[in-house]
Structures are given as C-alpha cells and as structure tokens.
Image 1 (spheres, rainbow, N blue to C red):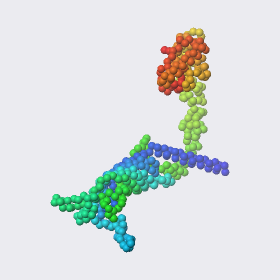
Image 2: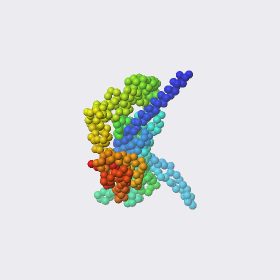
Image 3: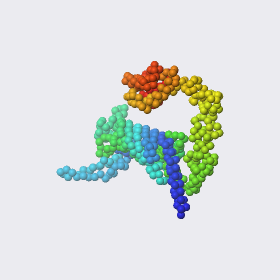
Image 4: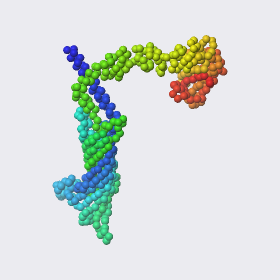
Length: 513
C-alpha cells in the first residue's frame, strides 16, 4: 500500500513538473515571436445607395497589422479604386411595388406613400474614384480557446473607423431621363451637358468630398508557412453620407445614407521575429506543446527515470545535474557542479587553501605559489627573489627601505575618506579611528604632506561648506595629535569623481605628490 501511495505521489509531482516546464518553455516563444505583418489586397467593390444596381468596381490597396495577442490585433488598411452603380433595374433593396395607402385630412383623402426605397427604373449611372484609409480592431475566433489545437485556417471579425475621399460623376444613359430630372431639379443638383449646337445632351451630377466611415466585416486567412498568409475579407463601410453615388437630390426614392463594400483577396508577409524565431504570434498555442508531451506515456516514463538517475552518485539527479560525471568524493553545489569557492581549479574537498586570492597561481594542493617565501603570492610579487628575512611591502613584495625595525611604506600611501552628514561640518564619532590612523601615518612619515579635497554642489554655499569640513579635519588632527597645520593643503573647487559614493558629503585625504 505504501509503495502504491509513493508511486502515485511521484507520478503527480512528475506530471506537474513536466506541465509547468512545458508551459514555461513554450511561453518563452511568445516574447520574440513575429508580431507584424504587411501585405496587399485586390478587391471587387460595390455600392449600396440610391444607384445600387450591381456594377462591379475594383480597388487595390496595402495593409499592415500588429498582433497584440493571439486573439486581438490592430490593422491599418488603405485602398485606391472605383465604385460603380446604376438605377436601370428595380431597386433590389427597395419595398418593391408594395407601397402603402394612407388616409388623412378632413376629407379623408387617400394618398400613396412609395416609401424610402420604392422601385426605380431610370438610366442613371455613376463612377466614384475613391481613396480610403481605415484602422480596425481584429478579433480572431480560432485563438479564443487554447483547449483545441490551432488550425491552418482562422476566422476573424473586424470593426473600426476611417476616412473616405470621393470623386463622383453621375449621368444618364437615356437623354429623356436626363432632361426629365434636369427640368425637375435644375442647376442646384445637375450641370447640363450640350453638344456643339447648344442642344441639351445630358445632366451631370458631381460630388467631391471627404467623409468619416465605420468599417465592419469578417475575414478568413490561411497560414502558408513562416513568412506568408493569404486570406479573403469582406468589409462594409458605413459613411453617413448620401453622396457616394452622386444621387443626392430630394426624391422620395432617395436613400438617406450610402454604404460601400469591398471583397478583398489578401496576401501578407509576416515580419518582426527576433533571435531566429520563425513563429508568428497569430499562430501560437502554448497548450499544444503540453498536449504533445503528455500524450506519450513513454516519454513521461523516460523523464521520470531520468529524474531519479544519478550517474555520478553526487546526490544530484542527472535531470538537474550540470556536471553529470563529477569525480568520486568531490563536494558539489545544488546544480551538481564541483564546489570550488576560490575558483582556483582545485576542488574544495582537496584544497589546502580554499580561500586563495582570486587570480593567484596555485599548486596541486590549491596553495598560492610563493617562491621566495615572503608571504606575497607570486602572481602579484614584483620581486620573487627576495632574500630570507628581508622586510617586504605586503602589497608588492618588494624590500622595504628604512630603519627602526618597524615597517612603514611612505611612498605608496592610501588614506581614508571622512563622510559628513548633509549640511554639517561636524566630524562623526565613527571616523575618529580613521583620523587616528592618519595621524599615526603622518607621525611615521615626517615628510608626508596631505591634501584634503572637498566636493560640493557648484554654488557659493557649497564651496563654503566643503571648506569648513576640511578645516574641521585639520583642526582635529592638530588639536588631538599635534600634527602641524602646514603639513596640510586644501582643495574645494573640484567636482566629485563620477561614481564616487557620497560625492558631495565626503572629504578625501591623499598624499601630496
């Protein structure tokens, strides 16, 4: 029973780990995935207005899309083309011949109301040379749920806003129709066209203007690989204008608002990938990777075995072991790599000096090489042949010149800095020890002169504060350790070196060169 329970717990942990690993690894693809696409479209066009007998037009355009997520994208679209239509047949969107009779007035007079879209059979036709630009939000249905695999085809809906520029010319094919409408509505809506003898020939309707549009529609596209998508998109444009067909004169047949539609065949190139990633954001589904792994119990068993296997017996399973062939007896980190704190190439379990200086040359036991036994490692010893018993500089390994039996290097002098509180020139107690060391150094080196450098904000008050701070240090050393004031010089004009901590609050002490 205990074995079964242990096996079930282990299997649950393994499945959870693998699922989490697959999700994490797959979502990593989303960051550098291609998000941009650009392309072109060709589109038959049609108009839904007062002259909406189908006369096909044609448009050509460009588009670019940015995928915000797998389901949502922003698309910019532009077209140049023509809209065409006529009124030669009965209006397919009208009320047919079923107008209604209404009775009104004191005499109960009956009148016939043909409605907004009564049948029309005149010879009017038009051509609209248009340009449009629109921005739409695209919602892809195929990516709303990750619970099923992606298909090669996707369906999406779109809506947005745009601008239309129209250049319309309308006229009549039948001269009788032209004369009838020109006689009825005159020069307010038509421009007469005459022959060389001045005889009336046609009535011309023109419109040139700009209108706001609201596009909406549906589309489908297919993935043809890492670079190309193709698709078909139908988009209708609401214009809130009665001028797209040039038929805007006030007849009872006049439609209040015109629409136009484009049925586009599109091709798009997918752009924008990083680090060699070929996938586009529209065609990624993170759950597919999880399904493909969990579908195979054999793969799961192999991963479980791998997670339990420890080839080098270092306590770290091979699944996580970055050094799966660690020599026997080596101490290892949690990653399975051999422990070597000082990084000298000698494992810590046999390193006689596990904290040797970084960069030092060491022997097979991990001890820093010091040929002349002066306690200065050879890698920074400037004199590796120092005689036994000679006092050396602990930093450079060179012999110290001087008497008194005490070592004091008066050439290579490094003095501490003193940091003050904001706006204060009072020495803080924690720096008394540092000033004691400065005094001892100056006593041991009678010829040593010290430069006190103060940094401040570039202003008169800042310079004055830096001057007070340097004088406070000199006064302290003079009063407490009898260091003559003439062994000091002051500088308060410079700016703090770049990257220096507490730049405008510190006083640096250094040897005068």
